Image: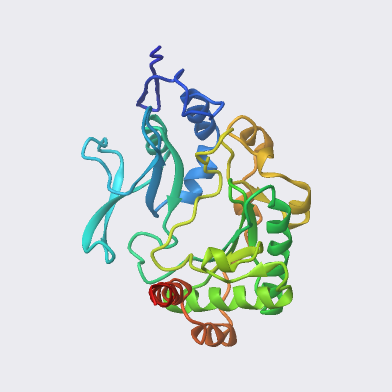
Length: 315
């Protein structure tokens, strides 16, 4: 059934269709949720090159970076050179409610903004640690690892905010004053290494999955051109959970399933906890940056190690 509506000048169609297999939600549920949190969601997305994960009936979810040619004129864009693919990519900037509604109507479920603002490619605005627990019901392990990261940050004179990833993990964000992206990447590696040293039985910085030994992976690679799912973004998972800000003192008492497109908006009231819980921007300590520059880049190290192991297997 097609149920057409118009909100803020945006035509919305097929609202009563299932969102995706196993979602337990309709397209209307997605649209209504994003509309209800539009002010907070746009605040997290504004002026940042945006990639989205969309769903279509009969297809696997797919990430969209380039804005399609049929996008309406009110969708602002920015062109960014992609070094990995050696081409220019035209990204959307989700700066207002109509743009968010248009994406929702395109069945864009997940919203992954850049860590840099448009026009400021050399300035990363946050240091980010993505804490990925092992398979299974291991969110509690991610929470314990988040407290390790908080302690490592505090020992360095830094403070951050925390949110559920909307999947099984936790994201820690530290807002930064003007900082070079390479220094941010280095500092991120150093924070991860310091947190690992606090409890090496729980946490690991091993990039290769088979080397993690059932521990929480402290992913320090969210830097430079990387993206991280935004606060308030739904995820393409059963029940359509939402990446949701949590006060540090409440982190031990929540579960990812507490926050879904059905429940999250009602938990917010009139507030915007992601903004309210976020500390003021901070300078990176020089010793943290210096330590980080001595730590190999995880992806590069893993690539070389993978090649070495492949050669060993062949011989």
